[in-house]
Image (cartoon, rainbow, N blue to C red; front, top):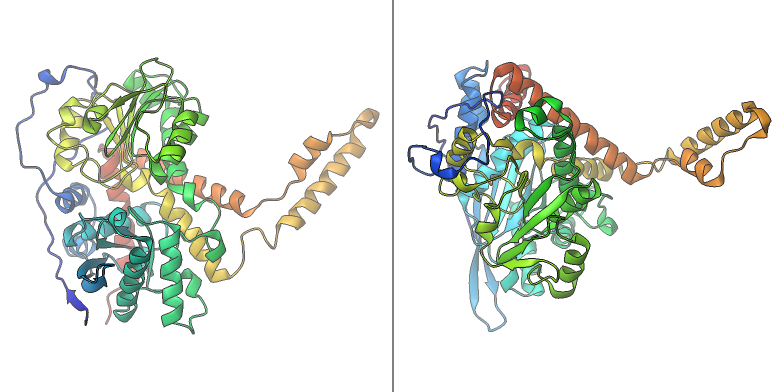
Amino acid sequence: MAPVIQCLTPQAVMPSFQCQSPMASLPSPADPPAKIEVPPEPEPNFLESVDLYFDAAAAISHVSPDILAQIKACNSIIRVQFPLKLPDGRVELVEGYRAQHSHHRLPVKGGIRMSLTVDAEETMALAALMTFKCALLDVPFGGAKGGIKIDPRKISPEAKEAVIRRYTSELVKKNFIGPSIDVPAPDYGTGPQEMAWIKDTYQMLRPNDLNSFACVTGKPLEEGGIRGRTQATGQGVFVVLREFFKSEKWMERLGMSVGIKSKAFIVQGYGNVGRHTIEAIVGAGGRIVALAEWNGGLVDDTGAGLDMAAVAAHHARTGSILHCVGATTLLDSAAILERECDVLIPAALEGQITASNAGRIRAKVVAEAANGPVTAAAEKRLAVRGVVVLPDLLVNAGGVTVSYFEWLKNLNHIHFGRMSRRMEERGKQQLVDALEQEMAGGMRFSHTTRQSIVRGNTEEDFVWSGLEEHMIEGWENVDRVAEERNCSFRTAAYLISIERIARSYNVSGIFP
């Protein structure tokens, strides 16, 4: 059966949006929701929310309207449809999309998700977020996103492999994948195994591409992946939270003490992002007071926080977080988000905090570890109540940052640190020897101290250093611009991205 491939024309949506300043007077987020009077308004969909956020930043930018229109528009999107033969002999048509939002930098970059919610608008919205996310952190990619409209939990591993390989072949035929063209990565419903299938399929169809390993990131280590990629998004979330909670200015405004230690966190989502975010928070002394999944969650009634080691062991044993000993199980996942806490971290899907439940959110800070979990209408209501939103463009950018490192590793055909580690160790060894010779009384470093000093940097060391640098610089820029331009963190993040992309267009010119 021949596949159906359809090119779609993206339509820009440009409603108005009022910029909210994080520097404005902040009422207490714990005020009773009944006292908050916000006029009702239509709930924007995901793409409309992204456009509203863009328009808020565009309104205070110094970029001309024609360039703004080019930055906002989705450059290309394809829709593919192909057959999947089921075990009972029936044939099911599978629908897929790939959007390339911006070609101001190449290749474009973005994940591939598998979900029944996948459609053209969602794909374009996610691709736009990738464009602005990469520009914000100065990662040299344009934005892209892909999706396959299928529930990966309801098909066999063999069927899933067939779907991924066929989808990849469609991308190859349309020139929508390649190390210098479009580089996918994992997203909701996909992971390292799916990325390995994509890499293998691409190599079969493009056998002469020397850089074929760089056609996709998020691969297993055995297939050209990079150490730290699995933890990268969660670690990036933690770095932004750590830097935010270092700010005496913001802690004073929120009536909180400096630092993550003892703060109460609620996390929605126990997938890759949520799990690694939790590990870092607990390691810094934070308390996870509730954890929500799609079918319910756990809450802590002791005040000490959930025993996350016990939760992890229970999840590994049963495949679910529910009914973990030592915690209270609630089946209403949405209600868990409305419990009192210092920080709420939505780390699942978009559209989790909307106009309908924003007034009941009792967190002081919302950190968007997922893409688009707070709608534009919800953010207005949160701002009225003094809730600070740390935006997805910054907070969850750790994944694409380390994907960038993996792409560079594949293009260079060598591990980071492979050429320098032993040289570093020899230099440090000479330094330690010289220090010992200069110390009076024949003092010597212990073996443990000597080993820790002379140890050379590994690939993972390079990854964590680069990730931390990108995330800290991103936070500092967003915080600075928000104060200078008297706008929200989200508007500041979009503004930085828009003006960087505009400078790229102005310098490169227009072809022909």
